[in-house]
Every structure is written in structure tokens, then in C-alpha cells.
Length: 323
Image (cartoon, rainbow, N blue to C red; front, side, top):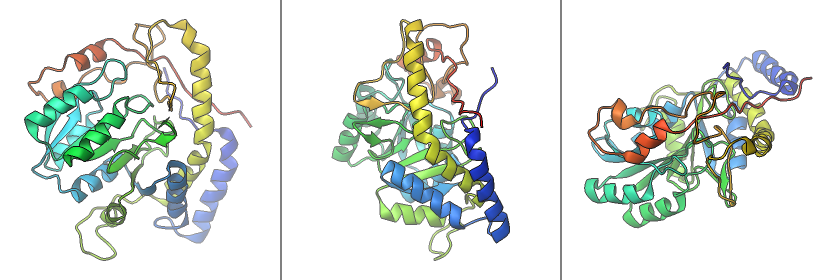
């Protein structure tokens, strides 16, 4: 089934106007729209934001800021391989944690056991499928008590909230993806969010070779003005997309008997609609193979193995109104 990017045709006129302005002003990077996009995201998420050309760039900035080279970081196995892979590439010792069957996200109980065993400096929590990890409150409290750095992978969590609190607000940093398949997209791109002003300033320098102070080493992870302009449009459309997806799920849910149930105090962005029964019109699975198997780690994670085999995703593609 062909994937459909969530872009509303009504937004074309405004987007093309932005792009015309960029061309006319001859500022294609580090300009007005990059700042505007970050401001819009910060307002939407109630937390400071820094834009990047990719999720990887934002994640790497956080890993470098917290000095996680040669340190142990715990990571759920039920996630995209980028999360542990980037940690490994940045010198961290990754140990995998099992997930829950009810939300596909990292298990608090297994996490506590792995903390006792491995004494990690940091933990990844990945919000899977569009909702907030069900154990996030307990995990956040636990990390604060143990003085463990908590990084939220929010790649799926656009528009999600728990008691009105959005993804990225429980940890020391949150990392969003704006890849083509996401709830809102700029084709490629990412965002780092944090309440830590020092991290925000570090991230701005890290994405730009350490400029302008030249006190740190960095790389080029800048977002172009054209991409940022598209991001401005997409943030404004995010509430519409999330509302559409939730209404769609309400209409479709009676077709199934066993599906992932969202708590009443939580809003899912429904990046995926997850069903625990095989269906004919599935667009596949969130993940078919746990990262512990991809990276050949000898660890027993029964829930992850079960989830990988026993869930499917019906199509859930937002389509805006035609002009």
C-alpha cells in the first residue's frame, strides 16, 4: 500500500508564498523561518526547541552534551535500530530492555532490574506508535531518584499527551523526527526539546560546527530555510491531523476485538493504529524484529519477541480537504 504524507492541499498557497520569500531574500539557511519554526514548536510543546536536519543530529547533540561516551545506556529493544545504533556510534555501551505487551513501550519492571544489573548513566524511553509510554511517570520519577539521565525518543509522538503534558517534557531531552512517514513531516528533519537552557544552547552550536563561540566541536546538522518553512506549515496543521486520526480510529475500532487501548487521560497522535490480531489490509508492523536480535545481543526479552510477532497496523493516512 502506497504511503500518503500528511500534507493538506489547502496549505500549498501559503507554503509557496514562504518559499518565494526565501528565494527573493536570498537567505536559504539560518534565517527567519528556522527561528519561526523553532518558536512555533516551542509554543506547541511548551518547551524550548532546536531544529536539525535529521533525528540523528538532534540525538547526537544530546548524547554528546551528556558525555555518554564509554557509558552504559539502556534502550528498549522494541524500537527502530537508529536509537541504539546512534548510541553505539557515539561510544555508548547499549544494553537492551524488554517492552510491555499493552503499549509496546519500555517496561518499568524490566528497566528497574536492568538498572540494578548495569548501573547505566542514561536511559532511552521510546514512545511507540503515537502514544506516550504508559510507564513514563514511574520511569521519570525513578530516573530522578537514581540520578540517571532520561532521553525521550519522540519520533512517533507528535501531538501525543498525558494529562495535557506532551512528549519530551518528562526527560532531560526529547528527540523528534520529521521523516517522511511521521504524523507531520518535512521530508527529513528533527528537533531537540529540553527544559535545560545549557543543552539548548549547546545544541544550537553543535549543529553548526560549534559556531559561533567555537568552544565545542560540532557538525553540520542545520535545517534549510525551505524545510523550516514547511515545518511552520505542518505545526499549524498538527492539531487537525491528530483530531482527524482520533476520529478515524473511533469509527474503525469496532471492526476489531483486540487492539491497543489508550488510557482515558492520554491523547494519542496515532502515528500507528495497533491491532493484536492478523488483518488482511495491514500496512505491516511497527517493528518486526527486536533490536537485540538485529545487534545479535544474547538477552531474553519475551515481551519484545511476542509483540514483534503478534501485532499489525491498519492504514491510517490523513488526507486534507481538496482545494
